[in-house]
Amino acid sequence: MSIQRINPGPRMSAAVVHGNTVYLAGQVADKTAAQGDVTAQTTEILAIIDDLLAKAGSDKTKILSATIYLADISTFAAMNAAWDSWVAAGHTPARATVQAALAAPHYKVEIAVIAAR
Image 1 (cartoon, rainbow, N blue to C red):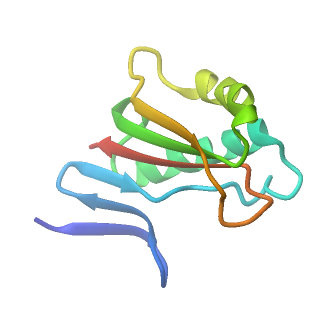
Image 2 (cartoon, helix red, strand yellow):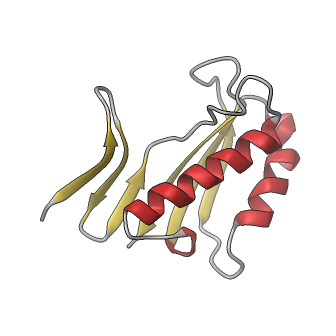
């Protein structure tokens, strides 16, 4: 079975497709990272996820699981405001949300998903 790597870099690929499963690396907001609040960063990340899933032949209705990392768990409701308006009704994935130190202090949220094709 072949492996497709989407946006590969020296350290990681943004997404990897194996068979009918799509694995997305943790995505962060680059455009809104410096000034964006958690809602703005989440909105940007979800658009990135939409794009990567489309490149992999999938979409948000096929997300199986999501792991959301928040730099500050007190922003949970603000992150959910963006998530809830994006996630497809009737297609909510299994999901975990945790507080974690992210790769840089300006990142407020990181999201990783696994989807079917």
